Image: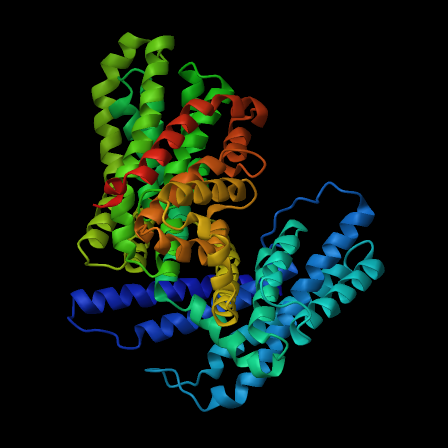
Length: 592
């Protein structure tokens, strides 16, 4: 089941890219529009998400806080049983809702496609069935199958009762959500359970159609397919050696500056961010190129890892930042406007890192590898040869940005075009291998499923909060913020800093957006400025424990202890804190 569902996901993702690319070609070459494009993309994407959800559930990959992994076996057994039980109950609710919706869905067609809506809801049913089977099979494979299965069934029945009987309603469901998340229940399942309780309110049979409709409506915006397309692009750039070409050119172009190798590391991260939109991809891809070069240039392993970890954070801020695409689509603002708003803050972050690197270079003056005289002699030749190799790589972000900011392409269309160009360059240089495609496709498919599964649950939660009046209760509770932008920014930044210590930026946004978006309206804060602030805030959490993903990736690449690396990141993080304060206080910085 694992391999089959994975390859179905990968093939569907490639089919999505092909449909988008054909649509772009039809529009600009043949002056024709594919009327069915959006409907077909939405249908394929829904199947990709929910088939993948079954696989992720079976493999135990659903996102959770992992706060109880080092506890005793008995306690861990009950915590795992709680997570599996809630997940099983949620999957059961989705299957029940799908089956109940079949009579109405059969008679309703998908616009511009010769099929009924039942094909969309069937994806949820099939994925939920695969996931439920996966949970049970995974439990039976464990060493304590009987006791674990017993705990799972107890919690599954209790979770179903919360929704069906209305055991917990109103604002208490949000308290339950916090408790479940802290107890390592998968974030998707915790949100979905509490959201279903809000929507049902003790009347499960009357609410089943809402579950399916809100789940589908929350994930079917075509803008979301930018997530897997840009992940495929970043993975392809990494696996085909294009990032190495970029790194060699920038080292040759900027290596003469004080701290030149470090400056080129930051510059390369900024350029690569313009193709991947992912900080982890930036760090992992460039770490193999620049960490050894930084060590040769006089950096310790910890210093080299710290710089690479922080430079990789630029993948969060520059277009096509995946976090910004998700934020803009969720809160219904223009993706292009959100991209434009982050350019100045992103440039400020990049500049502060370069300033730290240059100051270090002036103070320490590390010796150049190979001797300065020899380096000066070969500089011109190295610059020329590396520029030739890097020029196709540099063309990708140029075409991507031109397409997005001129309005020629939507963000997801730009992703498909850039993916085609990168694939063509890799194939022309004979660097594309089947194992590369399999690895890149697996990473893109898995991440897409995990993010979109949470997003679907958040859609139900937002609907439930609105219909139950919980959103108004929250607004009243946070009334002290109304009219005070200073208090608003303090609450938002502190909340995200705390949450970023445990979850990555996209889940953090999906968890908090239902609460902070209504609050922003009370202090007249633009959602575009708010998105920019959240992203800058995220750059801090990704290099601080216990989450600290970039910190751990760079430490592993440098073979350095993460505690030593942590001591070296503070000069760069100080720049992030300064930029965060400026962007929060000055809306003009995000008003391009």
